[in-house]
Image 1: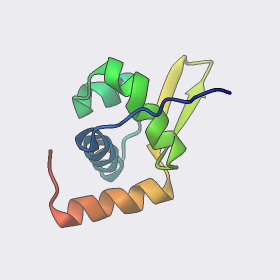
Image 2 (image 1 turned 180 degrees about the horizontal axis):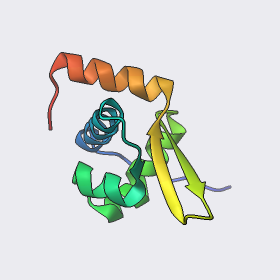
Image 3 (image 1 turned 135 degrees about the horizontal axis):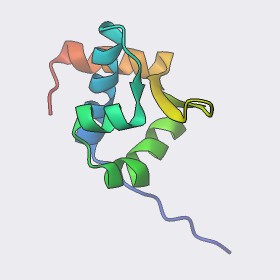
Length: 94
């Protein structure tokens, strides 16, 4: 029998991640993982240990790598975009 320990994700990190990506989209920019971490203000250790996996598992973001350029791009999915817009419209800030 194995036990999977669930990781909890701070809601403020989810909000910050989604709004950062939505803002970049509106500005016509794609963010590399490095740019995303800098702009979102989420500590990289927190992002890589909990937030990234939770957002991917929930279907809110995709992570695409380009091995030739050695860059990883993070993007909203349609579901993530809809949720980010709802958060923005509700005036939720962190």
